[in-house]
Structure formats: C-alpha cells, structure tokens
Length: 294
Image (cartoon, rainbow, N blue to C red; front, side, top):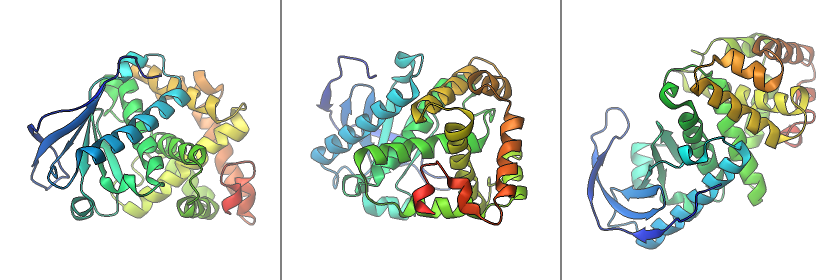
C-alpha cells in the first residue's frame, strides 16, 4: 500500500544534474511535478508539458502500488523513500538509450520516455523496472553486492511486468511469444549454466536476453511446481528472499526458508525437466502463463 497524505503538485523549474548512460555527458534537468515520494524531472522541459508529466506520474504510481501489493513488503514506509523519474522525450530516448522503453538505475532513479503515454505495453515496463527498485530497496546496503542471482532478479521484474499487463488487459503479446520460444529452445546444459553461473549475459546482449527468459521460467516453475498457491504467493516468497538477504542472510538460506527447497534442488529439477522435454519442449510450458504462446 502507498502511504496516505500524497499530494500532486507542479513545482518550479530547477536545474539538476542526473547521470546518463556511461560515456554520455549529464544533461541539465528541470523538475516538472511531484506526487508524494515521486519526483519527475526532465532535460526536455520545453517539449514535455506539465499535463504529460502528471499523466506519467499517475501511471507510475499505479504500477508502483500494484508491485507493492503483489510483493507484500514488510516495510512499506521503507519502500516509499524519495524516487526520481527522469522523463525523456521520445527522440532523446531513441538517441541516448536505443531500444529501451525505460530502465531503473540503483534504488532512487528511473528513466522512461513519454512513449509510456501512447504504448499500453509500456505499463509492463513500468511495473518491471519499479519492481527492480523495490527489490533493491529491500536489499538495502547489499543492493549492488550481487548477492542475489541475476536470473532471480530479472525473473522477478519480468513476471511483475507480465502480471500487470495481464491485469490491465494489454493485448500485445509479441514479447511473451518470443520469451516462450526462447524457453522452448533451452538445452539442459544452457539451463544449468544460466542458473549456476551469474556471469552469464553480463557483457553479451543475446545471452542477457536468454538469461531473462530463464529467469521467467524459474519463477513460473516455482509458481506451478514447487510453490503452489498462485502468483501472489510466489511474489511474496520472492519478497521474503530480498528482505532476508537485505538483513544479512545468504541467498541460499533465504530461498530455502521461503520456498521450502534448496536452490540446488530447484535448479536440478529444472535442468532435468528441460532435458526430459528436449524432444517436445512445449511440454515444459504446461501450466505456466506462457503455455498459450508456444
């Protein structure tokens, strides 16, 4: 839940300097509007209206609330610390971050373009990236320590994004079809590598894409086979993992505490399933949210 007493207000133009992608020079940002703990700034204040700002603000807070409700975080006030959204024009986003609808940076900065106003699919991107920010806030001082595997982090973000799109009735599923097909193409060896070698996909975009697909499958496996009761329970279990690691537990111990099985056992079971379904890979999607996209 969001805390009470939120106020939406436009605020005066204020020069800020926020980081861009590596290799890019910072651009001067102007504050456009604010809603509770969320402040929206932009280097494109001349082309982004206050009306557009408040519309994006509303979308963002709705996605934030959805994520928080699914995750059932223990410390809601701790989640609602100041958050800056950097709102870019469509042209700047294409130029500076080609191929992206939005992305999170650390615990306190989120970058999106005004395309979120016109593309319903982008609501899933909001939920995905805000999910990363909430997870990092749960991890606290360990948020950049690499203590939670990237497949788990990306599986979490992707699954929240998909669930939110489903709730909103977004009809576009080309991304889901592509992910389902990637899952069906996994070999047992690649599945084992992704789930045991956290360096997989760190520097290669194609590998990163496959790592995210395996993360999705990992979450679906927990939801349908290891942790019955529905997606809400899986998200709450994942929240428990992030929170426990944030308190100093290892990922392995936090995972076992939440899901009642060791990470090693779940990885072994997934690898076995992938190997067993090598000749009929659609079977590995049975019961998942991706079964219809095979």
